[in-house]
Image (cartoon, rainbow, N blue to C red; front, side, top):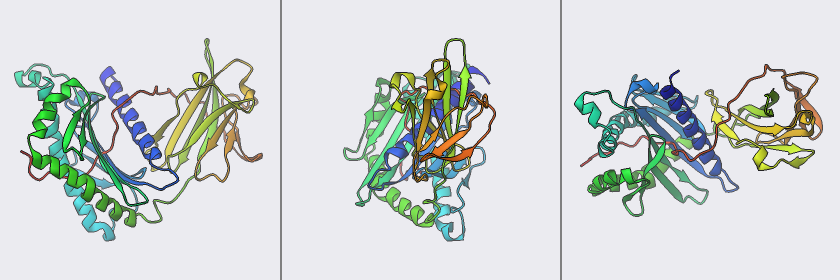
Amino acid sequence: MGARAGRALLLLLRLLAALAARAAAAQGPARTHSLRYLFMGASEPDLGLPLFEALGYVDDQLFVSYDHESRRAKPRATWVGGEGSSQLWLQLSQGLKGWDHMFTVDFWTIMDNCNHSRAMKLGTVPESHILQVTLGCEVREDNSTRGFWEYGYDGEDHLEFRPEMLDWRAAEPRARATKLEWEVSKIRAKQNRAYLQRDCPEQLQQLLALGTGSLDQRAPPLVTVTRHVAPAVTTLRCRARSFYPQNISMRWLKDRQPVAAKDVGPEDVLPSGDGTYQAWVAVATSPGDERKYTCLVEHPALDQPLAAAWEPSLPGTLVVGVASGVAVCVIIVAAISFRILRKRQASRAAAGDYVLADRE
């Protein structure tokens, strides 16, 4: 894998992590439901990314995907695409095909205004660029709504639509030209607002009704702890996998006391690809102190917090999952090395199936 392809993959993982984190923030005591889409594409195929790819989420469950090559929407959840959802599925499919085209138009506009399309027009070797679009809405328990429509360019925030003002906020100087160009058409702004405040919430309600039962299912995490010894530092890594929903809490304790933040790596939550999620968190330890550490995991599918620790009698493997002092399971796995993603501000991600009718 080349450097550019690796960068693209890392960016995609960060976007998915940001999407998961955003969905988690929406799940509080007052239940909030969300419809979120992530659109992403590369101007050149050498990044290992498609020209256009779409992922759709209800709450934190992936339910639809689409790519430019197949030009087909594919159901990613069992409750989507059946006979009872034929009309809704037709709307989703047509909408995503429309966005395939619109994404390309917007991509070229942004590259033009950033002076990044000149090389292509001159026939010289072009640079590769990445565009991400976050689009969707949230419906709160009191039926109030909030919409979001954001563009990220080359991994940085670029533009954000403000429905109340019917304008765009430029997140960086390069975005100002596109902001001014898009604000010339008031029709576009009104269509954007109509989608965020009316169409998106209505579609979310349809999807929630369709997924009744399935969207409420829960799967508890399987937790493992491994030790990784390096010349400079010894690291304990706690991994939770195969859990749903994605909101999870993972904390390291030393002698039953919270470990200082400087010694703990970021908690990363990512989709596993099968409808469940995985997460991990690491802690730096001193040699010989490993048994003093416990990974405490809390999740909606667990009746009580689960504590996991590294067991030195089984090198490189995990053993312990204890809930309320009762041993829950003993799991033996090969030591797997995970690269901890550093948290940084990345373009938030998720987008939708809205087709703009008249772009001027």
